[in-house]
Image 1 (cartoon, one colour):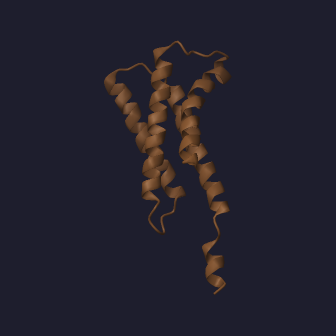
Image 2 (image 1 turned 135 degrees about the vertical axis):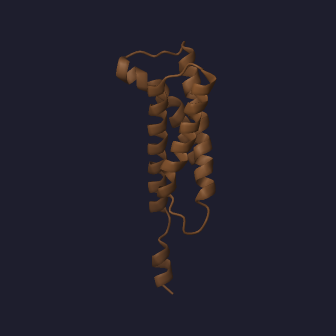
Image 3 (image 1 turned 90 degrees about the vertical axis):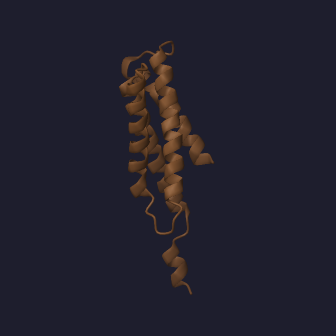
Length: 125
């Protein structure tokens, strides 16, 4: 549950903070900010759920599924924004995508380091 919360927070907060870093202003009053934040949040949560569902199978290499899962859901989310003609910020959506992918890679790295090595356990028989 902790990875889901961390990725969700990253996907929601980074698109809001990125304009502050780049332009020095926050634009909370724009409809595009809210649309982009919610779209980024939903796409990241769905991507993480898809990623977790695919990697439960034995032998699945987790790092190989991160980019396809997130690219697919964020691409679908961007397409939905375009089709619905809702106002959004492409750079904020891109920042949410990059941040959530980065957070997932980081969490996967720490999870892999924390797990006991299977080959060490098998060699000890």
